[in-house]
Length: 336
Image (cartoon, rainbow, N blue to C red):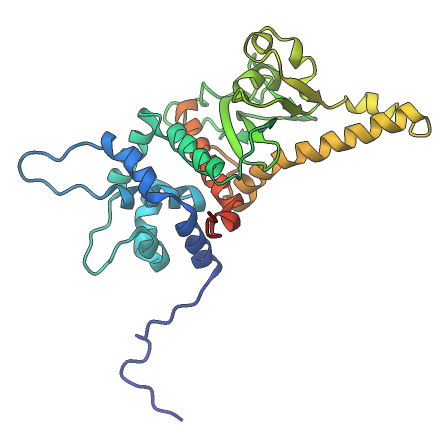
C-alpha cells in the first residue's frame, strides 16, 4: 500500500462544477463597473474619525447578486461566503486576509437599493447596453403577468398576513383565482421585447389586480405592435391606453372557447386558427423570462413583506434574467 504523504487531504483540487461555470459566465456578462458607478454616489460616506472602513461597492453588489441567484437570506449569504469557496472567489474576497461582510451590512445595502429605487435604474442601464448591442429591438412588446405566492400563515408575531398581498380566501374582498385555485401573493406584470424575449418593464401589484389594468404601464412608447393573451381583451378601448398609446396595434388572443368554435375546414376558420397560432408563438417568447425566474433562479415565492421590497427584488431578478438569456451573445466579441 502506498504511504500517504503528510500533505494528504490538504491539496487544493478544483473542479469546474455547474455552479462555478454559472458564476464564470455571469462574471463575464454583468456590467459590474457601470453598475457600481451607478450605486457609488448613494453609498454612505465614512465617518471623519475611526470606525471600520466601508466595503467596496463591488463586494456588496456581488453578494446581492448571489442572494438572487441562490435564494439566500442575509444571514445565509454571510455563512455561504465562508462555506462555499466559489462564492468568496466570485465576490473577490480572500478569506485568509479579508473580513466578510456581516448580515447587517448585507441588509443595509439591500435597503439602500430599495430606498433609492436603484433596481429600476440598474434594469434601465442593462437594457441600454442590450439595445446598444442590438439584442433588444424594441419594435414590439409582449405583455404578460405571473403570480408569486406569499406565506399565507398567520403564525408570526403580528398574527396576520401581509396586508399588501391579495388574499386567497374567497370570503375576503381581496381575492385572486387562476383556474380553480385561489392564490395569496403578488403579481408581476412584465413587458418583454417581442423579438428577443428580454424584459424592459415591470409593475408589481397585489395578485388580485387584473392584468388588463396594468398594460399601459408596460409599454416603452416606441413599439408599434403589442401581443397579449386573452386576459387583455378590450385593452385597446381603455382610457389610459387611448391616452398614452393611441397608435399601438394590439394583437390579443381569442378567448379559448371562441377559438374552439372555429371550423378549420372552412377558409375563414383556417385563416383565423393559423393567425392565433402565429400570435401564440410570439407570445411564447414572453414566457422565457418567467422560466428563468422560476426554474433557473428558483424564485417561486416572495421573500419579504410589502410590495416595495418584493418589487425591488423582482426588478433585480429580471435584470439578471436578461443577462442570463443574452449571455452567449454578450460573451461574443463586439464587431466594428
